[in-house]
Length: 392
Ligand code: ADP
Ligand code: MG
Ligand code: MG
Ligand code: MG
Image 1 (cartoon, rainbow, N blue to C red):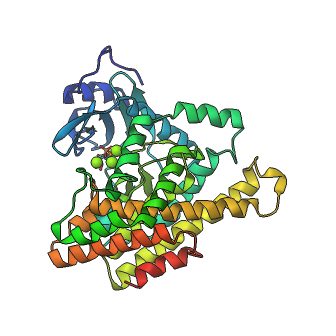
Image 2: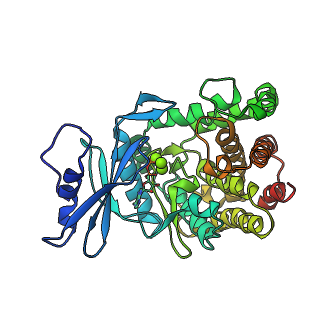
């Protein structure tokens, strides 16, 4: 893709977006453009051909984030990180990420495949959709992206080169604060209904819980195991009954493998809390299947393509997977808590109109979150995790 002659950053106009995308369309096509993002961190332009309806997406980073009514400066480098992560993950997770057609570092945009025929999984799940292939696809995505960017698959020189390329300190800091720190103390960034205050103060007083969260935060800060997506919630996933595509890896960095796994599991759990009967069973199956597919595929890749298995020492692979499992549960617990009482909530919970049911669901999310963090060393299998949902 050619880039523009424009060399200093400014927010793209719709006319500029059309000009940038034009070469991806047949000559003379009549193009139109609409900004479709939610506008807190990034612009998302959809440029489309008025006749065929075919489109492309241009996502442009804003130099600030609009949060709590304020603007926080936020590095534009995240656009290049996002494009590079989409490409790197796309090498391994075939068909599970959008194709990248081009990117421009100065203007901080990425041109990519239009996925408008799919829906954001969080939205669909809230409407009661079951997405039969979601967990198989995400289990596969997790195994492929995380295995292939880890020391189990890469020469240590290559791995360390990639880890340096994907240093993403500013975006990591957001996670460090909003996922691992603020919700566990009485910080201004937190946001919860007065009816939850008692439950929240119990979290703040729970020293045993906070000790475990401190350990999890340290893992996040220090363990450069694989190239993570870094923000793998159900709002970062497009899906329908047959297809699944993971978008929005602007938080990508080298971190602990269990973080991506845990974030996805937590967002399934939050949805499971809001359902009952068969609807909940669907989510239970997705939680179990995500882990089972991940574990199976990761093991297969280890055996067929692994280079670092420590000369086949007995039990090594099993111990690596055990660590990933324990980490994932702990990170899932942090995600459940922060999505309930921290700065950034989820519509699965906030969208429950009946106040009593909403508060009840939020208390359940806090409860499961705490249990996952405290008991992550004891829960024997993924079925013990889904039992927490079934017991509600
Ligand atoms: P942000 O980082 O600001 O959350 P996202 O990458 O999640 O940005 O995109 C925001 C929204 O823009 C998505 O929820 C989706 O509605 C739309 N969008 C993003 N990427 C695409 C795409 N490739 N195809 C179609 N719509 C997209
Ligand atoms: Mg968004
Ligand atoms: Mg997003
Ligand atoms: Mg994002």
